[in-house]
Length: 230
Ligand SMILES: [Zn+2]
Image (cartoon, rainbow, N blue to C red; front, side, top):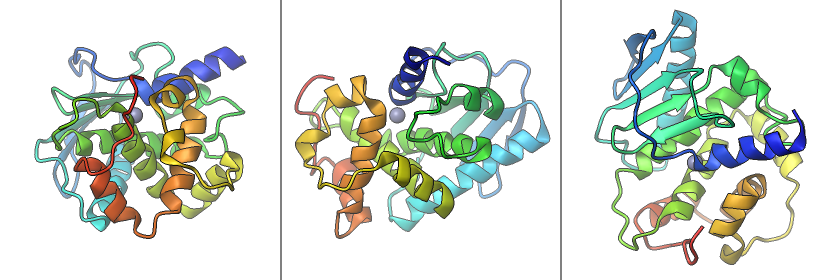
């Protein structure tokens, strides 16, 4: 893929939100062990893969003492997603749509901060990212604009949910060593340089003395990044 496509893929990774929910179509449905998540996917192995990724995301959310979504979350694997998009969260239905792993991997550019992840690792991380949006959806947005805050939580949980090797690969590519100020986590960076936003989120989050407490502060509106329209 050329550079523009890669940038578009990264952009939509961050911003594919709020489209009308489709029907599941041809997929078969299963309830993931532990409850709370239903998966629609074509094969048993893919349904298992989604459930594993969702369970990991749930564990991270639980570990941080953040409430899981009260409403049931549905995760549908579909190759019929908006062009350039790898994952999508529909807030009205608590529905997550993700591309199949192989197609998702094709859309991951070589210069992405996530390019060090293999197909399964990247897929799992996108499930975790979108699941984090479902988690954030359970919190009211008192400021009226929580887009950047929501993406902060989504990227932080996405990277937290990675296996250690994947996280190390991400950190190597992200390459940030300098402290990140909250002002550097703007809606403009999110929109126009989502990989940089992801790298800055992780750098900023990693510097927090109590990361879980900080995520709760963001979700509950005690911290806001949405100072400007994205
Ligand atoms: Zn997102």
